[in-house]
Image 1 (cartoon, rainbow, N blue to C red):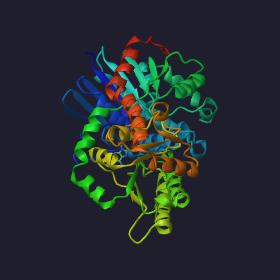
Image 2: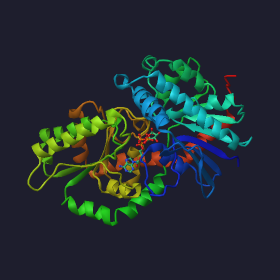
Image 3: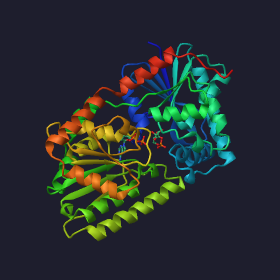
Image 4: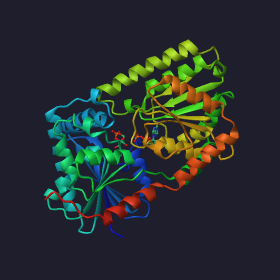
Length: 444
Ligand code: ADP
Ligand code: F6P
């Protein structure tokens, strides 16, 4: 079996303090890797002046990561990747901040990665580059003479060409994409947008990302009996749990979600003191200004909603900005009557799939899902809402909370069948097969 070389900014290499960074990319790829020799290359997550690669071998996978200098981190990661590309690709042109120096820093880190990776490559490797941090990497490898198959997968949405046009020198990034033998995106609509922007999309395809539903379901069964889930369950005193789990990111629609929950309590007073909304949202990208502002806004909103709607024995919202281990979350999902997943835009949203996977088949909870998550194209049993409208979120919540078991079961069964059919391993195999079959469309 040819070795798989994965390149991504965030790499789940073993860390001394065992801290885990939440994020769909690392979770899905980890699930996809089992049983295949692999080299996983990328950023170590550390900032230092060291140029020495950090190498860890775990089973069949060798993790090789580089530190970034403070300047590289500022320009490439916090600057161009998270201050420009992230909002742009999530359709939020108004939040973008472009600086030429950051674009140059972004390109420089991609070249640094290519230079370090090149000597590690073997002639028959399959190279798979991930996400918006690394768009120019394929072209940088080609410039150094790499002849291997190189594929690219974009985990986030791709906006309509007219929006992408707002990016100065954006054509350069589209040209970089042509260095890949295959470019994968999450949905048909992302593929169409990207093909239009590139004016030539022969090697663009939709490969909706999957997850290990059976494994997550088994985790949920175990974890719902453990201490943390029992504590949560006891603390609800019989109230229905509405659960949100996201990185603390403005793409996730959290202020609108909080307002939607407040609208539920106002418009449907029968739910007062009968429900509890737990939002787990670990701080993400805290070095980017918009993310800090979002946290302040949510702190205030949560406080206000608790003040206005709470009672002496009831806090309507529980708001946690710490990370919670994924295995524990599985049990929390199983306890929840409603999974509330309302991003304003999302490439896929694995949390929606995790909620489905974790349910008790005999008495499943109901998923309330944004129309603008990639997952909405697949999860036909969910209650779909427009996440910009708190009233619509409130109506979706009310419908979920009052749904009878027979309907909840039939909606859940449809979605569970869908996610069981597309595991992370299937997803990666589909992409790799297509990459193997692809004709190189090299720029040079
Ligand atoms: P994104 O990639 O934008 O973060 P996804 O929903 O696709 O969004 O993936 C998020 C992944 O990170 C999921 O697997 C989820 O379980 C995990 N995750 C999200 N929030 C937390 C959290 N609070 N603690 C631990 N893991 C989390
Ligand atoms: O899935 C989108 C994504 O941007 C991944 O590329 C990334 O690892 C994850 O979200 C979390 O973000 P970050 O790596 O910036 O903490």
